[in-house]
Image (cartoon, rainbow, N blue to C red):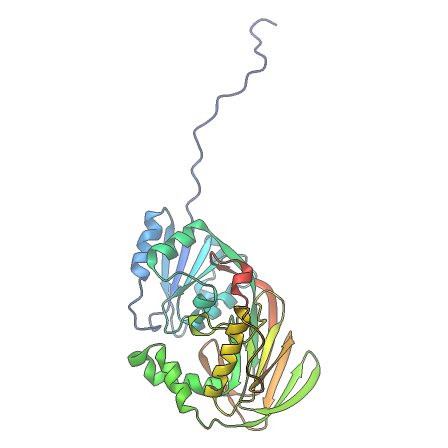
Length: 322
């Protein structure tokens, strides 16, 4: 047919421009000493083409309200200490929205467990690259009130150590935890009653830690075989007379991680696994989750929430295990 053209396609249109990432930064102004690189981080995100909205946490405003419009954002940044990070992770759990644990607190153990960089340029590059892994979260319930934790919850000596560090943080930073641990030379000992996935157990000791992530400062493993993606907690029973006696166990865990042979020390702690655990004590013991002290005391219940969090990190899943 006259004028008919065969085998011809329309000319290509102009190249598409990637959609700018919308980033929500939630900042806790009371975390750390207020001297983080957050302003530079935000500036670099904007230079990289991201749209950034910043919000400060408010004492009387639940974090869930701060992210009530979560669907409008591609990424959330939690700038604060571990309590801020875990609370925000819990608030957005199951949404699939990636979360960056921006290290603006004192210890920043969640950021250390995720092996995050510490400089603004590296953190901004990580966000713009979009690398993340999927992990579990913990949920702690006390007197009917529920909160979330990413790293660990505990009752006993670890909570007492955190309480003792509060007045030292401003002057000594992360060393406040060490100084407080040194003061716990005669921690309170009691009989703990546990229910682990329906099975009852008792032991005498100074505390119980329910761990999801398993590295202390400087990525020292608390104990072996803690995996934040395996759908269960590692429950650590603290039997030692004081926290300083647990240092040999940290050495054993590090030796195991580096494949340096069999453990050299034992008897100070015991580890178990459970998806849900209730902890009670003959004497009321203080509670903490991810460094946040609770007003309440034992008993408490912790349950695992499998695969509900996406944390931004360049690390592989096996690199965040102990």
